[in-house]
Image (tube, rainbow, N blue to C red):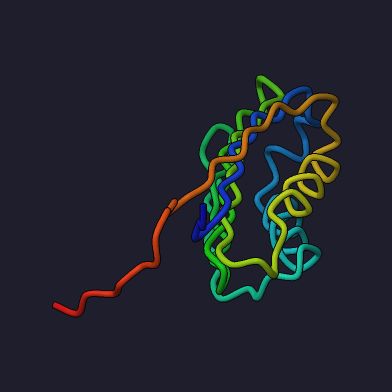
Length: 124
């Protein structure tokens, strides 16, 4: 069955809280993760919350990487969605986990846009 994309949903635990609370480090890790996976970075947006936590997105030609952090819990929710066959989302996800100095990651891959027959594009 043909699919349009692969979406990794990752629960990343026991991370370095200092990294999780640094907007600059989180942005650097996600951008480098996208590049390491072979993606083409288009746009980047990150926000530091008060008193703690960071959320951000890296838009790539192939889709996106997102993160939401809870430094007080040592936890990050990450998703990496890639379309096509050129970029492996697991490469980006594993890079992020290592960059956060995580001790544990649970992740699930979801196939997006499943088609059992050829797709016919409709122009409205």
